[in-house]
Length: 351
Image (cartoon, rainbow, N blue to C red; front, side):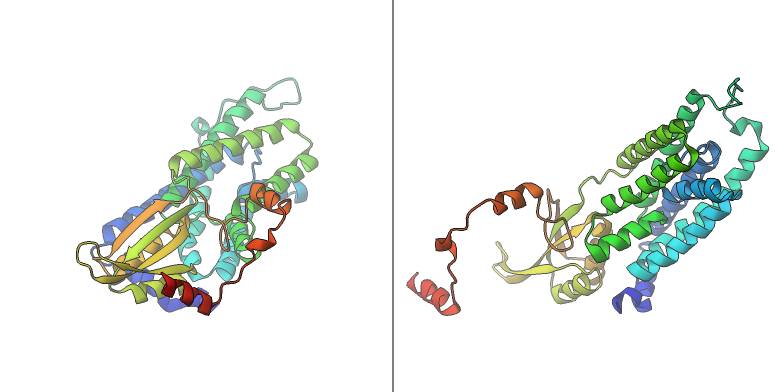
């Protein structure tokens, strides 16, 4: 808990980002976050909100609230919810998460108000809606176009924000908090939240067309996030060889809250004894791992690979196929041999 609210660590991150050799990369990342937030707001302001398309997220919650409680200012609801969730995420996930999220948390509502003003004051911003004899209902084709366009823009915006190393905040703050404290996958929590919002909207509005279009928009969003943010693997493995291994190991353990394994090794050419750090981490920690390693030792050797699967504390649980096999496998008592230190020493001496 102390590390989560350590202002010195956050200040170190900020100073590192704005060092002369890092300033261009930092500006590029921040621009990606801002551009991603703008595209996200564009999709919501031009397509999602005007056509009442609920596909989850903060915008979906705001549309749901507008129908349930007759709130007319959807943008205000989004802004309040975005900032409240930002505070919740910072409280449960720490200042470093808040620092990554703060740009989008302020940029997204600002762009949302800007694009809403443009939409309301320019005829070219509207899809051509043909009035029908069915009470002036919007044609299904128009809703489909709005759902696909809105979902795609939201997906691209979120993907660019992730590429920039930031977070869009919103319901992700809740999903990440639940994942941290209750060991539930972020994707599962996000799906439950979005499904609850969509289901509640269908119950309140009783319009199957809008519900189906909302689901189509959600799929378009997820698809575009996958294309824009191409890192599909959730886990990585890094082997780190450095003279400053103690400092790097402590940073990984206490700053990133990742466990490590220390391996005694020898240089194949030099024959010198070295200590190697073996660590498994998520894609969200990828840049942070490299940053803290090269911060202490620019000459460090880092070998990183994608992990096919990481199982254990902090990652996924035991796969169902394996736990099911273990459940129905009889234990072989002959395998339950406890090797004491003395026995192990004796085995080594025999060799």
